[in-house]
Length: 314
Image (tube, rainbow, N blue to C red; front, side):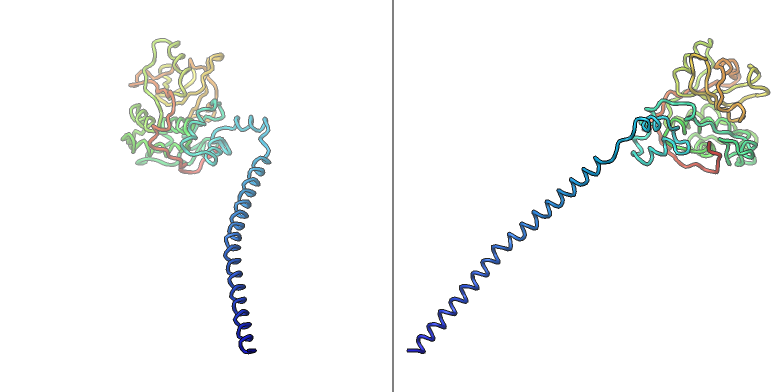
């Protein structure tokens, strides 16, 4: 009898252990999804907290003072720590040209490269190592005035920066320009083809019959390359059989233009009467000037931003 009771007790004890084991398994099964859910909730809360922290950090950055904003707007484009360099670090390439075009052009933003070796030797601002380069023994200083003017226009109106020598090499590629050992000056056709492929809306013109017509046109374009000659008028240019200069920023009140004079560091970056230009236009040339109406980034097939050679940056 005791054996039966003992056996029954053993069976009951065994059933109790099995029941406890089943309860433990059920508890584990129930608690496991709860634990995973808690982890997911905690992770979501952590991400939300980090996002809120980032928003708070962004809001905590103080806005620029009005004077700082005004100072940024006055910064010369691409000169030293200028607008072009800042834009290049902040906005995409395709938007830079639009932003630069939105700023009112001022004299300090205009590029005015010099072509001669004496300026380079004296470390005159805007002179560069390109004056020592040449083609078939013909020095750049002898024929580079038109190329300096073209580089002025490209660097001022576009978001890129190149040297006059870079412009020379590109003109040879884009237009068939071929300076020789005796004659290196670029002609009107090559100037137009090259600048057009650089995104410039430009055309060549004859000297208008009246000064007023010339005056009105220059007042309504971005820039112009003009060919002057002392044989037509020597009021300003002396002993000059033919020379390209670049004019900008016509002022109606003074009837003057801002002069980029690649052959004269003394006259470079000065204001002169527009009448001097009109009177000295070389009428024996096929054309007398090229006017640039605007720059269009989408029409620029070059988009070079490589300054070849050392130069004296202002």
